[in-house]
Image 1 (cartoon, rainbow, N blue to C red):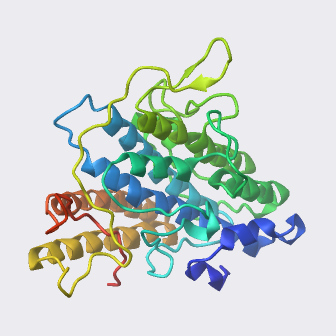
Image 2: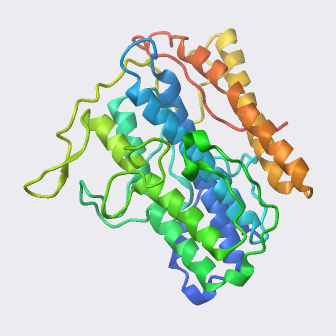
Length: 357
């Protein structure tokens, strides 16, 4: 059974990590894996807002390509996290307003407690926030204070799997191969400890890199940076390169110009108002509702494959859910083309709020 504390904003990941190893039973593992599912889900809306805001008619496209690859990585991580949960007998919960992340707000479970994750267009502030989501405990380019990172949480979950490999059942495991984005983006069955170890390594190393290199060890193309370092390069507008004298990585490489982007404003707490003097016009409200409906339909579609008892039906449902993702972009970008009255050229944008059917 997944703990009821999961269904509200909380510090549950921090609390889970504070429990002694001998108390990390099957329920602990299921709750931790569900929290991992929510963490992966939480990264997608802010990254998608940045991606969709980029003006692809100008610039060299490098920042757009980087963000696009990171989004694909995160979608794969979400699938792997769902497989982590079902292989130990759990069932992913995504389509529930009490678990869907709210923006602006913290990451699920108390990870990065100092960080407020927001939805807005691509700006230096947004890129800085993206990098702080992905930041390892000991990055190669900056020292940070101790805190609970996503990578540290996955390490704790992996330790529990290693201590109890007998809990790996291999039930309701889905497969989706995406070789065009690199082998690291494949969603594969996690029916052995080795498969679990490999999946968690992919999730951690694509996000944080390794202790020796800022590169993504599981790239779609050679030379891809891990997410944290890719975002820091965009923020500094320079590629990382190793200083031959000190051996340290520094932002002294080739320029990375920030692309032109639509000026999507940061979505306010609770979303854009629907009534009162600051409410948008009826057409904007309709588009906001359309955007939220598309997001909610996607979450419901993503739950179904891991609930299906028949393997072939599950694969069909997963393919349908992936197709559902394409319905998010159009209303989101239409909102980004709608100016907010009196906001100096800033525009609306998607809220990524869950609405019940």
